[in-house]
Length: 148
Image (cartoon, one colour):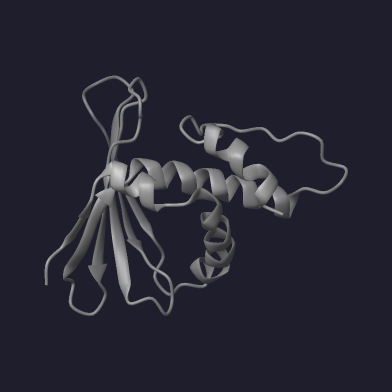
């Protein structure tokens, strides 16, 4: 079996931001009930403010795959996140796919913020603060009206 490799441009062309909202909504509850808690390993790099993070395993009940994200962060660069998501078969460990992580990470952050704002907000809420989401706000702006 060959491994699917998706470049950033292929990921951007394939991933529809508005379709992500339903997936984020549906994924929150199963992720909270998963038997295996995700882990995060993070280390500073020699350049000021840069880090390398590995997030693992990302899995949902009933889906026979898991992912590992290698996530270098260079805040002074555009895009700041330049990493890879590795998708593995849960039963055999076979590497199924590798894809750019920057765009999906930014969209996921934006969609999660939009869903959380919708769930946590009410008619009396008039403002939302966004902290530490440098690449996500342009996507969040496009998704905010679709979170309802």
